[in-house]
Image (cartoon, rainbow, N blue to C red):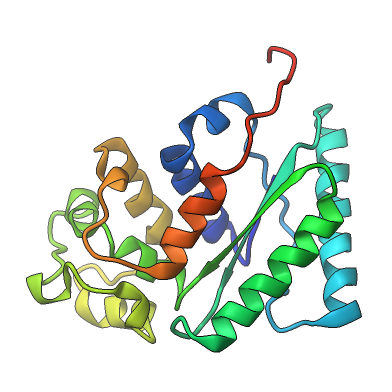
Length: 209
């Protein structure tokens, strides 16, 4: 199951999962739950309750789809660069989701600062999607997690036509289709930690679909 702050985030997350763990993507159905995710600012009992509610809804969606719930991948933007606050939020939410899912799997994709920073790791994909768009060489090969407002930066850079949040899934899809997601151009700790986590997700043994 996929959860995130928006449909765009969930679609981007699905594409990154397909690239990072193709065997998993081929085995399960990546189904979205549309409830907005608001976990990173919570703590203690409030976080545990919110995580439990989200996982319960995911289990319910799987049941409605006549499927088996095997796990949940949750996306949220950190809205800040990696640092102590990022580490605390990622650790706390990951633990709460793990407890709520029990024997099933969970991954918390906390994008720093925003999912657009992950897209910047694949600059060629922007031009593949729109030939008039080009990410400057000075932006490439850097730590995209250090950009505090990557979405705003892209809106200012890509003006013809203007970059919109809804372009994100299409850019990710272009990168996936061309095999770019295997070789990020630069670094982003939050992206690398997500890839490590999702690659550790064991492939469930399910009846043939």
